Image 1 (cartoon, helix red, strand yellow):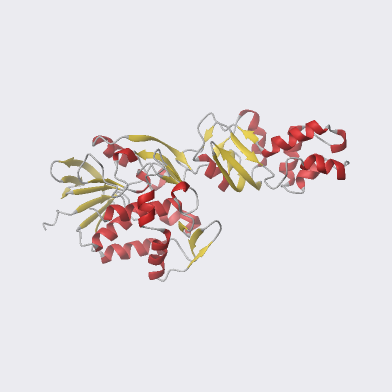
Image 2 (cartoon, helix red, strand yellow; image 1 turned 180 degrees about the horizontal axis):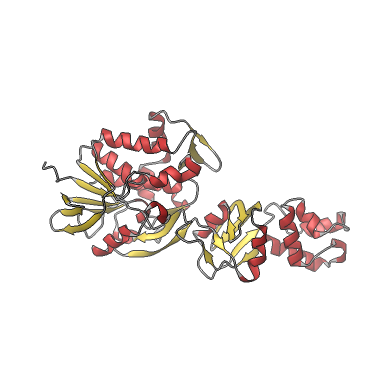
Length: 390
């Protein structure tokens, strides 16, 4: 095969692109992996606080958002969390489960990047790093211009992700290429992102640094994890999860007392009539938050408050409505909701239905996982699926 002729060119050396290149290379394909960054796996390196939350034991299709909720089933069933764990184990990388099925390296995220590079080396994958793609043409093969060099291949894989975390070089490049070839794009928006508050909710920004376990609800989704008040609004795992389902103009509901029964305040009034709402709340949630909520509800001593007001207060505390005026955007978003439409792709191979030899994998596709390793598992699974076909 001529030096500049490959079986497949993969654009994007993140999680999906690296695994796809490695697996395809080990299948005997001649692969070129291209990235405009000068090093691979930049998102991997910062993930999980530098320890890479590389998968989740509870991976299932219902933990993913997509215009087609069934699309991810095939890839996720054929390359599972157990498959990637076996690969991690084969490289003697120690790991641990943190919470809710989230798996992290004991050491560093650098170990996952090293694993992927080792697997690429086994597959004799060629790397072209620190080089931008300036042109892509398709006649019989794909002709990709990288700087002064032009390479060709019958298959082209889009693995450049979405626009989240632009400081790492993330762009909407995959969407631009997909549009050129007639693929539809589901409107992208930031996901797993802190939400900002304004108006009547501004006073809660004074609670910056306060965190508490809650149930956060957006749309039909709910998450029982911690929420964190920030100087701009709301964050923490529960809020990041809910943000993927939140739409501008919608409210986010917060249950500040997930373990409480609907009549807990009435019961407390009978047993401790002289206690105050603030004191009652402070037994479960941080004092600063207890003060803010009780002041907002304007309830002091329980004995001086009617049963109806206490019932209403308990109901409000179980579904406190915040009205975010936005999010902190792609700069703080861990991933992107939306992307290349799954209607234009094969769920078996990730190949474009109407464009021969074109594939899309990972975050570039309209499949977005929950917080906690789900997006890495989609990267591995979709990358593996495409690697079987290129």
